[in-house]
Length: 312
Length: 312
Image 1 (cartoon, rainbow over the protein chains, first blue to last red):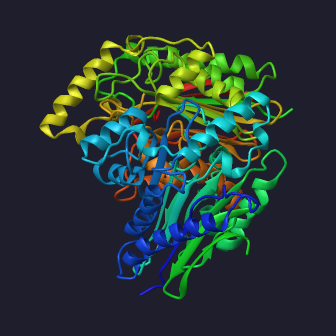
Image 2: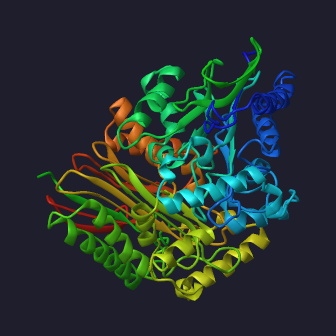
Image 3: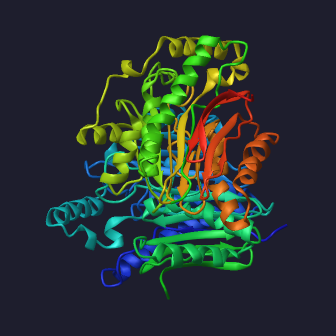
């Protein structure tokens, strides 16, 4: 039986230390712990990594704290469009939904796409229609809305008018949730879910539902779930590039992740808030980010459950 | 001044030799030549690879012969949803649209996404709305429809009822158009456009608009445009895997392409009709396919214009 491990993130768009109250920090830590416990309950019984990452993400989709499901950010049209993907490292099976508007838990829809269709990605109206057909819970847009996120959109609209939106903090701009796991049978899996970023253009799809960009898992190599400015990750194939560096160049997981998050994605013209959680075939974990912090946590057969927000 | 080259494909879903009349073959060859000439007119004057691949794809979108733009296949709802992407190897800038319904030339919309937004991919209603805002030509769904493709859908619906749809030929199932180029300044570019496959599920997005799956370009490495069963390419990161093999393992373009098209994509459980056109930084071309044929052609500073359909 191999080492088992679960690592999660709730996005690298953390509130700046100066704005984070003690009580809010406690809420975030509690949310991360709840997510880890949900996934770990499956892994510690010898269950599949695929189920564990889905369960961990599901918890964060339901919590209003995180930018996914309930609590998702508003797009430019005062609505919500949600993206999610899940990938099974055992056979590279995967499913994803993009720009979905009515699916309560996009990660469940992603899993259903994987299991009940020949497709890998369903977008827009088709994603919502599929979820309904398969009996997944559908909701009105209001379900996703929170006052906190509505205020963030209004602030961003004002900044847009002033031409100061580039100065928006990571927390105002984006956020994502994700999980990676290695199970007792040695299988890897990854899952990611997001509402995108505040004031995003209608129909904008980011890296989260794109295999090899924001989400990737391959047995014997690694599993990755990313958070940050997704367009850069799509152009760089962030998640798959980490896998390719390991497979083709023998880099360690830590070196491959750093080459992207602290290297490529900090170059002139490419500087972008970026973070990720990753686990390799031996259970090594990497949780790098180049922002002020990243909501994150991990638990495993040889490590106690721990969560963190900033670099302390 | 470097060698310049343009390679195009009109899909690996060719009509079987037994069904292809002499007159149809002549039409396909003429269409391919027209596409090559449109792209080459730009390259031979020292123009950018990016403009050349867009121009080449545009011609095939407008011709009813190919599964893109006018002549796109029907989805399961008797409608059309179109995908396209374009990528500039110089700076990895890229744009794409997915599940678009009203854009006459999806490749133009992909380019506009790249140039006029911070986004890399717009899907569904948002893609159509963006195209309208930017003054691109929008059309009714009827514009895309051809009698040939309507009959293909009806046949596929019958086969679906009979449970014999797995026996459908590649020509009945899918098709795509694409182009790759190397320009006089040494820049690479790739473009791909498709209607997907006949009877596809509403909202299904394939590999074409996904960077690193069906479309990829990186200066100094290669440019790739793929055609075939896109879900496999998305899970394998077909286009970027070719680039990664060249970058990280020093494989030649030909070896890297063959490793995927004649190797990985012919393994048990992965057998899928696949083809692609690719060009590397020195102007070497690869046009592999594992189906009966692939509509294809190439032209360059040291090669006369040529087109082909089957392996002769």
